[in-house]
Amino acid sequence: MIKLTTDLRETVIAIAQDAAAAIMAVYATPFDVEIKSDHSPVTAADLGANQVIERGLAQLTPELPILSEESAQVPWEIRQHWGAYWLVDPLDGTREFVKRNDEFSVNIALIYQGAPAFGVVLAPATGQIWHAMRGELAYRRDGMRDSVLRTRTPASAPLRVAASRSHRSEQTQALLDRMGDIEVLAQGSSLKFCRLAEGTLDVYPRLGPTSEWDTAAGQCVLHAAGGAVLSAETGKPFRYNRRESLLNGDFIALGDTRLPWRAWLPA
Image 1: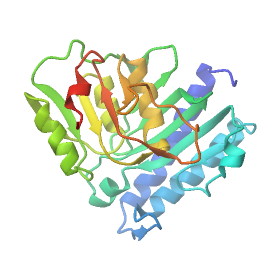
Image 2 (image 1 turned 90 degrees about the vertical axis):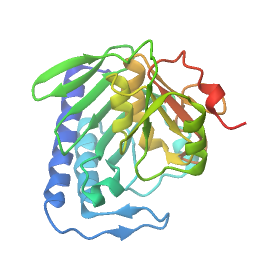
Image 3 (image 1 turned 135 degrees about the vertical axis):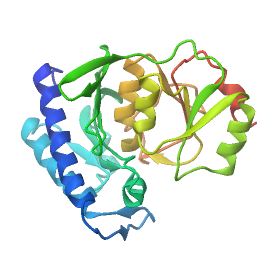
Image 4 (image 1 turned 180 degrees about the horizontal axis):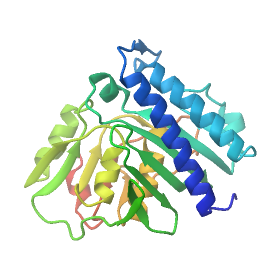
């Protein structure tokens, strides 16, 4: 296992900042949007940020493989032997980027033995950075200052619930209706995990497909702040690179893990 040090943390944060600069350079232009084979959008910002991150991580830890949304996918026959690797979404929330609502992020996670060991989420539009190492505290960085993050525990009514701007299904709406006294707040990308970690949101339900690079960095930050990202099927924290598919199942992210989340799920 690569040693988690202050130098590694700061270098990865600097790589994320370089990627954010590449993203914002495209954001300031009338950029084009292409549609990938999975019907998701991609822009020059996604591809430029990916190049920055892959180059930086390869120089930092040449011994570790990198799995990124915008790179050629690695066959399961190879991935299943990885003990540690980088899991990257260079521009999470491309739909929000295209809408120009500022709710997109850079996600970089180090996965060790199937769980996030280190995560960085950066909001390019604001420059805010959320970061955490497994077994340590979670932080939000504003400028040069790090603030310790803790979830809102105990969470009390009205619960503040994150709902995606771009992925609100009928099933999700039915879940929200079962939660009782809530305040629904729209938020894009993995920033939802960060808002949970800092206590401004309480619950983020996701009934629908996501990919492993969408959740890993945010999960690391949220867990370090006292919350959890739980599989709706098993009730256990998400694990990574455990099967051929890179798609996650339904999940619910909680600031207060004592909330009765199972009662909200579809029968």
